Length: 253
Image (cartoon, rainbow, N blue to C red; front, side, top):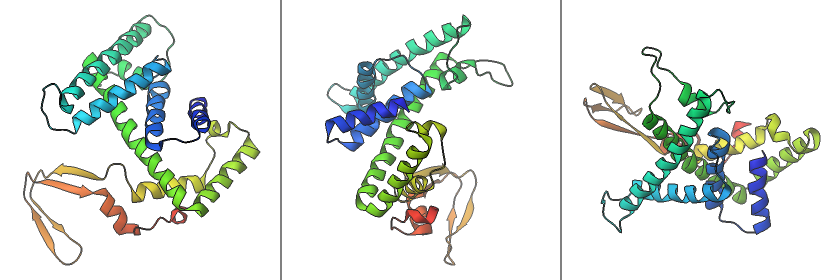
């Protein structure tokens, strides 16, 4: 809660913000601080987040590993991030081995996890990969949802007013730190769910068919899917088909 207050305070002080950029930094700060408890200063987190953006830009670019290309810059950024993550993992593992009290977070879970069959622990490389995956997944998806939510709030003032009234009521009855109590927020939850329905941050999933099968299209027709075929499932199309394309958060209340 304090972390969110700090970011919101900066936005209010600035007066005008670029929502997507601010939400990316907030999401990254939550991952580093609340989920992984990485011991970085604000300046280090900002630089690390910038490197993560460079890595992600390179991840979705032409795979040309030559100076001047985004892919090359992405590989260098990934190497920098992994070096920083390794330092944090090694330090946390040393603290655990010494019996030092450490936060009960994802980093501790990965370090102390044991394979139920072999009893072996995760390797350093496996843990580093998990941390990078968490940074990647949370950084882009969460900030995308928050940005889309801001867009819908701006274009649907009645829905925004209902959510604001809900938050004001909770603050008046439970105190200014009511978020820490995780109270029910039906109107706010409805806004988030409807945003996810209309603009899911992950728009599709791909699966490879292990065996041939016939898929009913729902209109009396069918399509044959051969073994080994890659099947694309559109999450966005499925959501739109089930509830239309209009923003109607009251459907969830």
